[in-house]
Image (cartoon, rainbow, N blue to C red; front, side, top):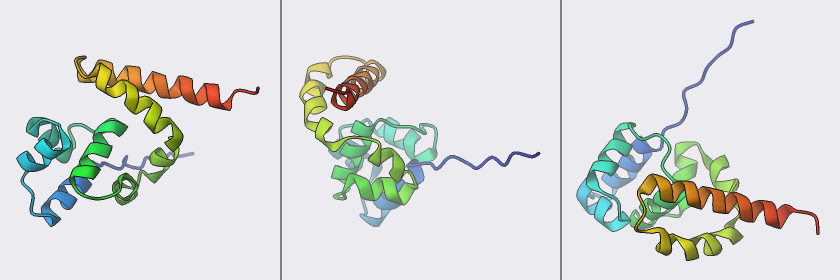
Length: 125
């Protein structure tokens, strides 16, 4: 039996495509999305393959598109639907308080917070 491996969809080239369609420089998009231009460059080149939901949402907003449209164009719509939109405002309340932490730490904490909240919502009463 042989196994066929399919390449994982990459969001970076899709971000670049939207950016170029809007005639935005990397620096302009990065500033508007509150990410570094180096980060955006690496994302577009595929060095960073799995940006956080928060980063993708900020990039989508800076591109003036709905986050779902960005996910759909990249073929990762299922990741968008795995999130419970009702958790967004709860998680967002913590995001500002975590701004001083390194990005990776912040992403881990927010991911765990989402998981805990989702588990709590889904738990039988």
